[in-house]
Length: 586
Image (tube, rainbow, N blue to C red):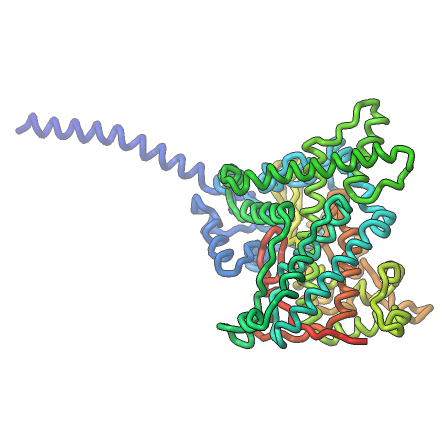
């Protein structure tokens, strides 16, 4: 009996000797895996006590709203602090959130060595396009690579190459919507894909020119023109009068379809907390693998065609330069000559630069157009005022009962149009945040040390931009931020769509003038790592908005579809992208 008891005691001690250290190791591991807050920056206390950090809270919000970035913006209001931190990446340092325009402006204009382009873009999209310049840190390699695209932002390219294709794309959209308005019989219809195809057609046309004649909108027009009465009746079956009509979609060319596939893939990766693992898994599926292979082959083919045109018209000077790929090829030839090397045209770097130009261009442009339609629909007085000013500025076109030409739109100076465009972008920013990495050991924001390698999200919406700013003691601000020439928005109407905020009265001429520095605006970023395509994007926006308001009156939509809620895709887009319009006659 005593021997059995001694044996049991021995086994108990042995078990304790084994289990105790194991539990200690597991507990120590648990403590090591817990989020490590940066001292001096507010955070959610519960998140710091969970290995998952803020991930469950973020996932819940994203599932409920479809807008995960809104959760990040809410943290500033929750903590009433322009600086806070969140734990949304597994077993990784916190992300710091900055919600103050002056500090963001200072960081991006004056502190490039302290805060550079964030690696998070490489984490999210890098495996899908690792050679694109947007993935690189600021330096000679980044600068030299971006020089390949410099010609694409010149007035010559925008006016003579891009503008006619943008104009033609909007004309196709107008034709499509005239058909849809008739078939819809007074009901709203979904416009999300239409805007997407508009921007895609434009960027594909001025990127590849006549060597790629396919478009996305023209098949939609042909499909709806072929509708029989029974097809039209079927559109209205099984839905209420307030529901938006969803028209059938025509098939588009393989290259355009693959572009859509790649955008959807990028959206999945962006929404994932483990994007690289997500890409590894997606890249193994035949659909994604084939789309990426087809992308490389298609773009390489377009580059080779440009090289052949260049060689066949070697004595024609610049006459052969008819699209974006031509200009990129021409640049590579110039660089090779200066560097005394053989030109390398069909490389992965140039393939990804060409495709990145087309993908980024149409995604953000289509989102901007959709937000413009949302805001001018909900503000009929703004819509009417802008239409009157457009008719006044293009009086010859109005008298002659025609649309203004592309040259007339380019030449026109309409301050209120500039104001409407900026106000749409201010409130409906397609890019919800800008990301930077702390690059030095002594980086600070608002007096708080930011450890090297920390990711900083600077919001383009929220406090000081689209809601009242959060008060900050001047002593905490960076000294260089005191010289900002940008005004501040009134807290009383900062959340309201009011284009007049961008206008000032010229005391000499007594005319309204557009003031781009009237108040905080971050939709294109700032500084040398700001949006490269800003000028081209605004150019496309101006042509599109002018022609759409010239041809249509955008009518109120049912209340359930009129909200300004967003959904986060590759860019930030309206959740209810619907249109109810009346064709205008002159």
